[in-house]
Image 1 (cartoon, helix red, strand yellow):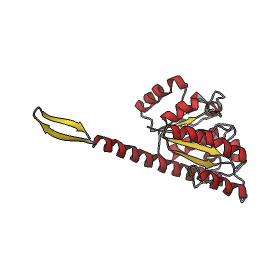
Image 2 (cartoon, rainbow, N blue to C red):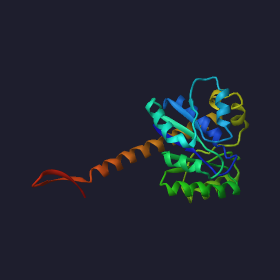
Image 3 (cartoon, helix red, strand yellow):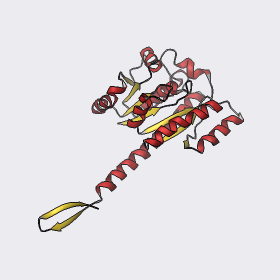
Length: 236
């Protein structure tokens, strides 16, 4: 099971909206079954899911103390992707989520405050050696600050090639537990989410292949030698 986390120290960055949208799109794209995990005490994602009529994605009620155990149980139940929403602060909760995630997505609005706030999340990801990426969210079309923000973020890590623009339908679609792909499937917002999921999925696959390669490389360090006591493994 892949574990994807949306994190940011800055409130209002769009973590909850993106968590719900990406989870739904992952299901629509055949990457399920998908399970949502809400670690934000505000419970906005939980409230959205409770309003939702569609049976997917699934939802898991947990807490930080049980996070690792519950993720293991969800993996055993056959879920292929877990999408985790986090609180808007650098807390033990975020640290714990980052530690168990395969990819960290940091939504960042193109504003000086958001750009400065992104640094704390990057430090946590670096400290745990976890892959992360930025998503420019809530951008204004043709505004110079949007491109400036992407350039500034690229100095610190990968920036998704998909920019999410400010549109009211992102918020309005979530009022009754839906997403823009369900309320306006042919709209620009739906296309943005579809493209963003494709990119996130490619990053998850790349990270998975890298992990497998590293695991095989570590196992390959053992060489077989013959001794007077038979054969044994010797670590190089």
